[in-house]
Length: 76
Image 1 (spheres, helix red, strand yellow):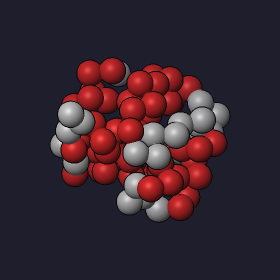
Image 2 (cartoon, rainbow, N blue to C red):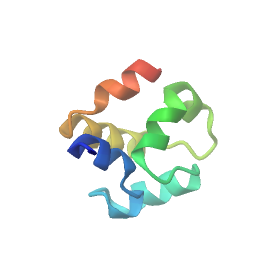
Image 3 (tube, rainbow, N blue to C red):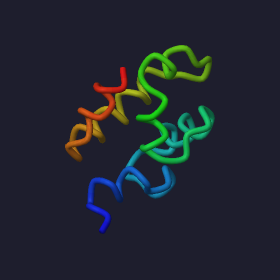
Image 4 (cartoon, one colour):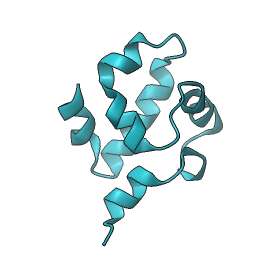
């Protein structure tokens, strides 16, 4: 059975409570859900031309609010 946190990770970016610019930036990076965002890791994200610190911070805050930030920290 899928937990609430696992469900959040698999939810399409378009359905998350993030602003339109943040969602657009994630799509531009080829990321369709938070599982992919975490899977790419901090190093990969920083290396991308479309990377935007402001949008990244929005996702970080979202992950933190949902108790999922530790997953990105492990991947870094």
